[in-house]
Image (tube, rainbow, N blue to C red):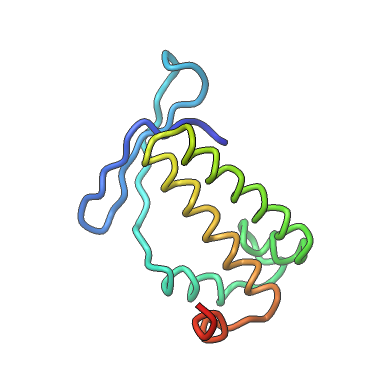
Length: 119
């Protein structure tokens, strides 16, 4: 896990939090990110192609096996966060799991409708 989420505040359409890398006395960085729905994230990922710049393009280029390994890693991190970390850290890890699961679905050629049909 990259750092610890110290707090998370939902404010309108923004998620604001702080992540500290290293021991508690180290520098704390603040981040801001737009909140997305599952469908908005899907639309964003669906527009990406293998080899495009950015994390999604790199993952798609790496293929299903490598993306699958990331899904397993993120699932373990979500589980460990739920067992031992704060709600904010758990939410962060689950969001990363959902992202990687969607990239895996895109790599497999699934549509969101095919996923919803069996949900």
